[in-house]
Image (cartoon, rainbow, N blue to C red; front, side):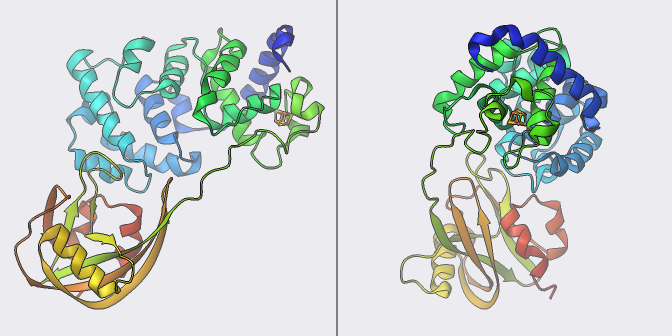
Length: 360
Ligand code: SF4
């Protein structure tokens, strides 16, 4: 399909919607259609697979069945229920938006695109998704799945991972949108990308819109979409320290803004060039908490990849030696028994080694 063939659009929409009606997956938020439910699901689904999201979605709604409950919740509980989903700013912003709705919108989720877009953490994608699916307003969503489908349908060569070209994709999506059924149409496009027009080996033989597809017609499925080469992600070696003082362990809280904001962690830091692990433990702990510790035993090594860097973390059990906690960087601390660790939200990295911490 290309832009000159706009007369194909109605037939394209019809085929897509028919396929969606017959093939859509049963997902908990689809049966409800309530704005709050749609919003929770869309916030969680950004950067995260459907299968991962379902149990989180159900647990979240059990604790926070509506905007008011979310607005009134302890942030720590919100983060605890988000633990493992990553991109924690989503959760913090979502709660801020809920508080704004209670304060300024009488507790009602705005069914107006501009008001909704003004809320914390709401960008073009979330606004279009919620406004179209929950309110039937004609806004086209553009996410990774949709960009891939559009690139193949129209032979668009602009790299899908370069935000410079988002406007180009958005313009095509807007023109193609079915403004009569924008919610179903948007979900159908995303579903087509997830189930049929997959990144590798798209199932073109089963595709309801193949007769409109540039990539299929020209056998370009493997060449589209184009991606911009990513810079090599940096890697850091780090230590993380489980500091024991009697039967308590020291945990610290990360600042609200920034990576993993508001989560708790075991104090950690980078290993400097030429530094031994033991020296890195002692230096980092002193710099960040003012405590003197003695590394007593190596526990394990864990690896983790963030969007822009990777880390390898060597974990040490350390014994408290001296000093009072004075934080540099973290915003709070607790000495807790291991039995209470489940009450605090931790990043995935820490959750990889927490089960290995000896009980005694
Ligand atoms: Fe994707 Fe193939 Fe369908 Fe084209 S025909 S939209 S490449 S699945």
